[in-house]
Image (cartoon, rainbow, N blue to C red):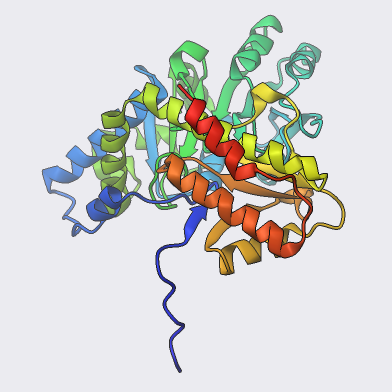
Length: 397
């Protein structure tokens, strides 16, 4: 059987996860594993824990690392803070809030939902109203998605904290930063978040398979009192100086080596510059889509300007436009891999990921490939999308 012909250059990966892996991270992951008694294992784990706490801007929280994806750490959080029959509140953000809610229900937890209005962030007033209505304080936690990867929307977590406080409710604030950490500002301690969870394959620039949870003292007390059966996910069991117990078995050394290298890149760049770079690139993408939208066939999905994510841009298409066909042409003819719609947005949207190891030249190449694919598909779009992105980048401070 003849092998497929080699395609020159490299395919542009503009999924919102997994994202492009820097060479330094790949090089670190090429190292051989070590026996568990080797002190370098503990040193790598400690470096990853320090890096997470520094990026999360927390000093007091306990950090737990898992050989798991984001759905795994969703389950870890639920297993530790809620027993079957207890309630959690899940504010609506679209596909990922609903997926988290369904997962909680599968674990026997009762879910109170607030409605989601397409194109809009979490309704903090609805969250406060739901908490005020819970006079018996049956709700043990608010599970909020910071950036919903499907809708490309970032919600205001300070508004979540205020909603809980104004309602006078003791519920934990649990924040999913899977799609925002390493791209958008986040400060766990200043926010007053009790639990934060994330994963490796997006802004942290590491392959999928490594998840984390940070839990403060209040959350740890809830976990200690929680009667839900658990073992692998158990924070109390993992709260140990021994690496074998930290991971409830063998640590995923290659992924940890990669994460340590990724933190080296992040902190060498500087966190403030990291955030600024993501803002500049996101503005360029939004400028291109605004120009394309003049043709009437597509538009930015998120209607609230300040809620547009710096991690991923979701683009709604008009009836008759096939986003999956567009993705195929972009990937196979122009070597630009973009993402499709998820859940209720499947067949209605496509997504451009622009987080992680990304620079202006890379995003311009991505946008040019998409514009070329739209021309091939005969999609009516306004002219000058790439030029609008160039102008945005040239004007950025």
